[in-house]
Image (cartoon, rainbow, N blue to C red; front, side, top):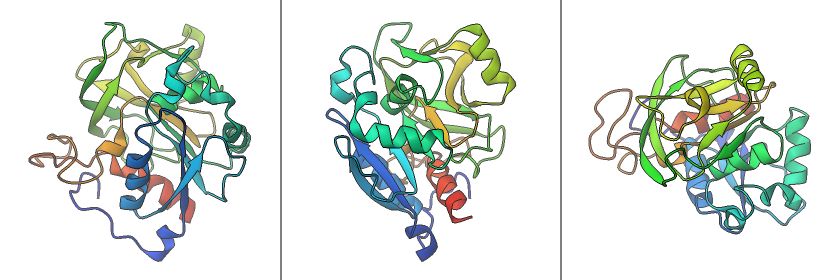
Amino acid sequence: MIGSSAAPIPDETLTGIRVGVISFPGSLDDRDAMRAVRIAGGTAVDLWHGDHDLKGVDAVVIPGGFSYGDYLRAGAISRFAPLMEQISAAASSGTLPVLGICNGFQVLTEAHLLPGSMIKNNHLHFLCRDQRLKVENTTTAWTSSYNAGDEIVVPLKNQDGQFVADERTLDELEGEGRVVFRYVGGNPNGSRRDIAGISNAAGNVVGLMPHPEHAVEAGFGPDSSAFGDVGLRGGVDGLDIFTSVLKKLVK
């Protein structure tokens, strides 16, 4: 149930789904992403950027952080990691669901798995706050548990969070329904057309700047939720991103 404060009860069907979380030097949300996978009911698999083996995972999360210290540009070095070659090939074929969160979104744009680029926030400051988002597309591998038009609240924390693209690309994203999440209640970083997350044409690759993995467990999420008053740190609006991919892979 969307917005419920209770985590789903894992069953053998879901625990058989293996979701890999890749770690780079400088990753800092990889353990949070693995915990989110486990809370959703799946099996989290630790992946190392320097390996060449995806360990038979069914999906991949590229987590937030500052991979390689964000040298050159955020995500620019990570795209050349050996494991990213395997991820890019499988994702491009449409066989592997991939989620990029914050720095992971930056890596996906640098690897040309998603269009556009991420640059510094228009106010040039690091920003951390609970952010309201509108779910625009529920047909992707990562959003099917939501209803179109749902508004969710998840934490946002970034310095290079401004999504930019030329007008033609932006029009294509809008026209093809590939804007997955949009900022509500104010644009926190100057992203074009209030875009917070997008997908590739096949819908198996999704990138978003806010952090759903920090809104999956009652007592540790945002104070607010788009689905009602949840009390202190009760918001779990990000959990359905992870349950969505598990349910899709079961089918």
